[in-house]
Length: 78
Image (cartoon, rainbow, N blue to C red; front, top):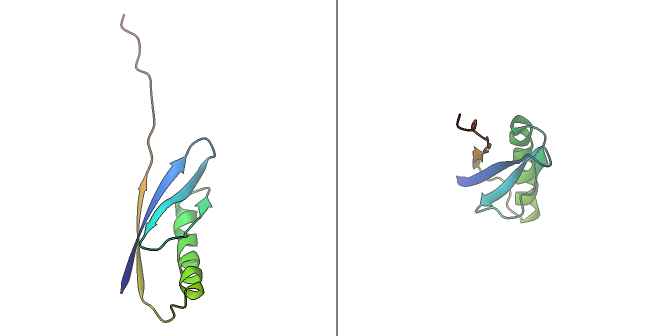
């Protein structure tokens, strides 16, 4: 079974989740408004990339690692 580790990140400026990297599968370029939508779109995109590379009948596990961050300013000292 092949294992693909997808790293997803959130772009707050664009308001989308996107595939930052996918190891060892290269060329997985997706974005979606929600992480759930991105997760749901990944299997079809992976299948398309496998088919394009001539890999048929493969069992593939996909692990998605997502990260996001935020910034804040604490109150000024009194």
